[in-house]
Image 1 (cartoon, rainbow, N blue to C red):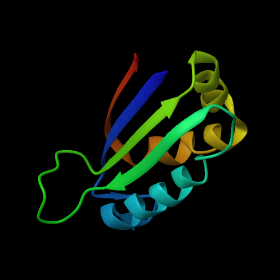
Image 2: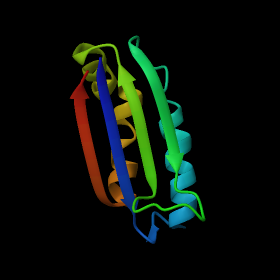
Image 3: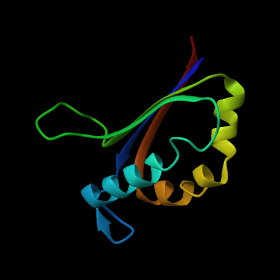
Image 4: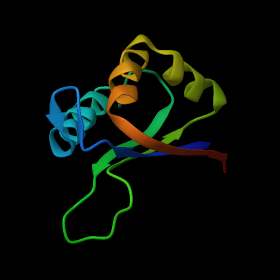
Amino acid sequence: MIKHIVMWKLKDQAEGADRAANAREMKRRLDECARIVPGILAFEVVIAQPGLEATYDVVLYSEFEDRAALEAYATHPTHKALVPFIGAIREARQCMDYEV
């Protein structure tokens, strides 16, 4: 199994919207990817919550059956369509994939 964890810090303003609006839109778009390929075992998108510690604005926690499933997800047209939007609104990105 491959775990794929990504964290994004968003710009204060981008694409005509503020950080909070862009976080909600990003979550909506990422949630559409939850079942786009076989082999996705877990897929959770979370926005930082007021009153709880957070150094990033949006986190994706996902699990894939194997490397092939992760690669299928990464190259799927639905996922690839997100890249320009996320690239335009993000200030920073951290990612870690690991096998268990």
